[in-house]
Length: 346
Image (cartoon, rainbow, N blue to C red; front, side, top):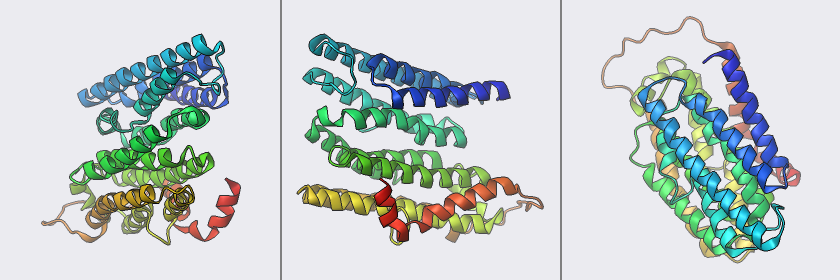
């Protein structure tokens, strides 16, 4: 991709995200979402492969429908309430339309079908952006308007997303699709707690971004796009695969790793809100995610290919990427002992 085009796209992404986070007016929020959509499309289609072009068209159509729904929701609310303030969402129809639009932008069930296909058609670095930074603006809108939305509807969407994200990831062989269903499942956890404790949602998103960034950068370094290539990636850099195993287990939420912290706090808060059954269902559904994380771990560190590979070992490795991966992996696995400090910050 042309460096100037990459700079413009990156700057537009930062600008769109900043506009959405800082604005109180529906028109400005909608404009920020549109800037984000138009900025990420060149990154998705930069390889000029038919699959990438198909992914960019799917992404554009879904995001355009979601943005039009947000605009319709805000217009109906302004018509009935007489103001465009994003915090004053009082119309019942507007609340339902906004919930639908945000679920579509985040990829929550039942509007999740576009997300795995778009990630599969993108490069690993673009897939990282789609899984983390692009989710921040719609999640911010959901955070601001959560007091006006229907708690039962959000809880239902969250539980179904957690279940389907784990269930659909079981038989996948492409690493990007596995990470896509992992993202859907984790967004279900964030949506589950957003009404009762919004700050915990932001903590979960920050830790999820940290863990996912570490995994995607590791996969990008070893060029592992499917399970069969993960079986030979240990030959390129064995320590990198060992740290990938720890990060995957952390993303699964196993103690004493960092990923256990958000799930522990969410289950604790749901229990305080007398939603013990919901907490139990979410905890049991996370076992589905644990299965395919263990599957990835098994393929990357334990399984050997059935035949001898003729792969030539690198005599030189890029140290700059490894330093960032080392920092992210350390944070992804070692933050649980300072969980009281992290909880106090949020």
